[in-house]
Every structure is written in C-alpha cells, then in structure tokens.
Image (cartoon, rainbow, N blue to C red; front, top):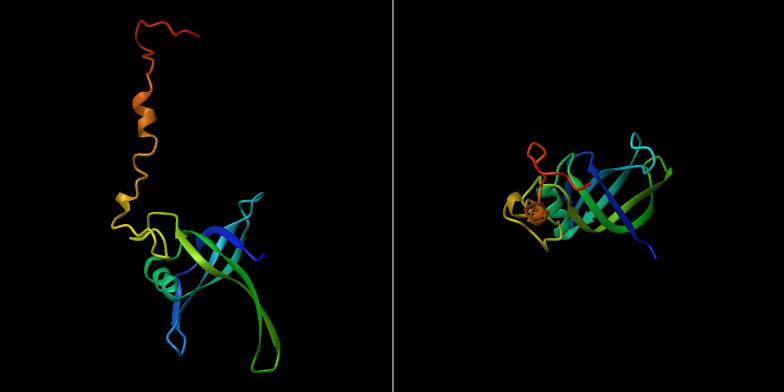
Length: 145
C-alpha cells in the first residue's frame, strides 16, 4: 500500500504547466511541521494533475494551509552531464483547502463555496453557548460548590 496524507502550508505559489498532449500539471512544496519539534519542518514536493492542478493554481498561494492525500513516487532522470538523479515527490490525488484564503474548499471541486463566510464554521459551538447558564459572580446568588 502506498498512501501519504500530509497537512502543511505552501512554501510558494503553485506552478502550472501543460504537457504536450494538454494535461495540466501543478507543482508546489508543502512545509509540514515535525511532531515533537515545531521549530523544524519537512519540505515535501507535491505534484498534482488535471483539473485538480488547475484548481490548485487558481486558488492556492504561498502560506495556504492544505491537506494532501496521495502516493509517494520516486523517479530517476539523467542530467545533461550524464549523472543519474533521484526525485522523491508526492503525487496528490486529493487536495483540501483548510483555511479561508480562497473561494473554493477543495481542489477536487467536490465542495466549492461561493464565499468564505458560507463555510458553516462561524456557528460551530453556538448552540452550546446558548444553553449554558452563566453564574453572576457579582450578584447575591450562592455558588453551590
């Protein structure tokens, strides 16, 4: 099984290109914090294809928080000098936008929003606040504990 799931921030804007037969491909790098040392991060190259690549190029930018679901790919190529080089990258199958920086919530297009205010997160927990009886500390009521 070859599965990679990452959450991190883009280190630069995505670069969008097209193959000779018209397929879109976007590349960018994601900085992922290390679990035990938040002062260190791993910088992981990401490759995205087709419509997802176009959506990433249109809606993502440097500093945006994303979740990547994809597979690890290791490939080789030969330089003009004849040296063999290895490249390790994540080929993203799904890219989710995790912050309110753009008009879409998912690069795969499954849950696009028209504006950041319509994402439904503004009212999370509001029903709990409305049901809590707050104690008036300046009043004459005795606190039962």
